[in-house]
Length: 139
Image (cartoon, rainbow, N blue to C red; front, side):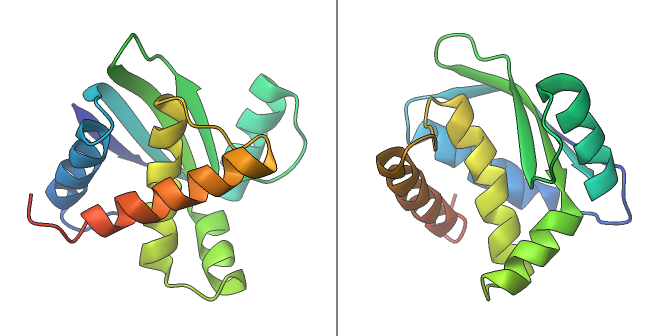
């Protein structure tokens, strides 16, 4: 089950397309979804979570809380729409593409992918691109 929660004016169009895409992304890695909660929020909201739970005092685009059990993906994914917009501009990509990258980035973390080293980051970026391409594949 995938849930979408909106703490900003932003709202996904056609959530079922995202459901299919995220499910296919997990399936392609040998995982199934137990429960994913996407929470779309502001920079301020996510900064407070970063400070309170991770003791980090900086802005970020996503914070993922991992409740995975075996090959069953479960977690809370907080996404700052403000960061996604700014990153899209900075990297000269569409908002839609950057949002998908961030959404799947969190899920990839839940499936064990990391971005804590240069090698891991390169693999993470490749996986993000691979999964973004699945969005357009007939489900």
